[in-house]
Image (cartoon, rainbow, N blue to C red; front, side):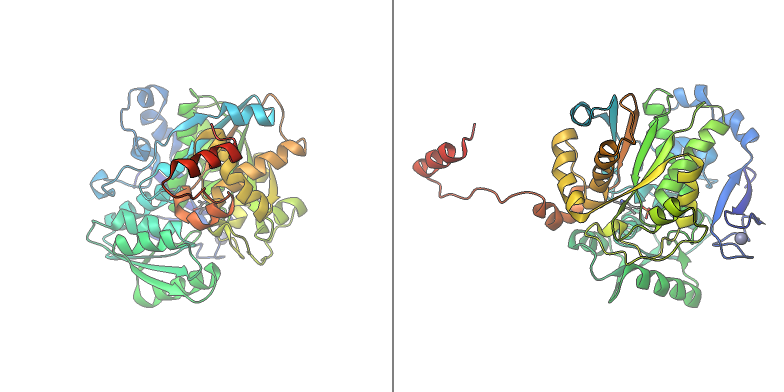
Amino acid sequence: MKKIETLQCIRCGKDHSLSEGKYTCTACGGNLQVLYDYNLIKKRLNYDELKDNHDRSIWRYQDILPVEDLKYIPPVQVGWTPLYRAEKIAEELGIHNVYVKDDGRNPSASFKDRAGAVVVARAREMGEKVITTASTGNAASSLACLTGSLDMKTVIFVPKTAPAPKIAQLLVFGAEVIMVNGTYDDAFDLCLKASKEYGWYNRSTGINPFTREGKKTCAFEICEQLDWETPDKVFVSVGDGNIISGLWKGFVEFKRLGIIDKLPQMVAVQAENSNAVKLAVDSGAEEITPVSGNTIADSISVSVPRDGLAAVLAVRDSKGFAVSVTDQEILAGIPKVARGASVFAEPAAAATYAGLEKAVREGKVNSGDNVVMVVTGNGLKDVSSAMKSVGQPNLINPDMSELKKLVEEKHIG
Ligand SMILES: *Cc1c(COP(=O)(O)O)cnc(C)c1O
Ligand SMILES: [Zn+2]
């Protein structure tokens, strides 16, 4: 592909051609990043072109995505999710502007569709017949959704603890589901072995260099939706670290193309016991140390972050910071986002709000800041956790006197 210059290792810098760079670095095993011929791309992708582009999906950025022919893209609309100005949240937290990017509005109801769409298109372009992934749940349900109606076999490895609605999605879309009696990290290793044994194309996060490419489109959209302004801070929940590094890459590329002139600070929000990226950011360590990964927020429950180094670099290079939050704070965030912005977030997505609240409390956010918080997954993905964050509904007989009693007792209306 003419527009791609190299697949470069983020760890040792080694360059790979497109065919050499199928997965990770051939020298050190580090993750690869796709670098383009930005001077070439500049001619086609710029402010004027985008202004007149009516494609409301990630494919409006095709010129800077690793896909040659749009005939291979999955048949559903991915991206161009709404960015809401959440006045109520901004007021409560005492910040100038808080924007909520509602990525739960994607076809399988999570941010992962951005990555899946690019990887599926790429896989079809390469003539792959079987695609596989390990996932805490959302990457899998996304892949199953995107390949649901395609002539492509999808093999999924998930930990048996994945929330039921995500499993339901996998089965409904017709994926081959292999539930692993273990953690996400166990599922990840098994998927990697299977991919080597059977030659299945592996979409797993970190291994596959193209997931970050899909994820960066969210940053492009944020800039456009803010009328080409860059936010001051972007809060993102972090598990493997692929979303935050993808967003960061998007902002960097838009600046490189001259579409924006300033970069935001990236803020990584992690669950207390799944905080490997935060530990590395805070200590300045070069290597990432595994943690237990235990948290109710299944989508960010990770012992060894598979794109951890890229996440740490995104935070460091952007002069951002990392916050960790407890499961209690994560659960409390669900109704906060719902009542502050009318958006139902799954636990991992609500963690972003909890992190923002904590950062404000610790004086890390300026009152004049424009803050974006990315809601990475829809609340219907994990209803049983949502129910833990709120009380029980009222239950009465269909009887007026019982209703009157209830209205009086509870001061309803
Ligand atoms: C995958 C996911 C994340 C974390 O993304 P990473 O790339 O693993 O850091 C956060 N929230 C939701 C809802 C997710 O599905
Ligand atoms: Zn390397």
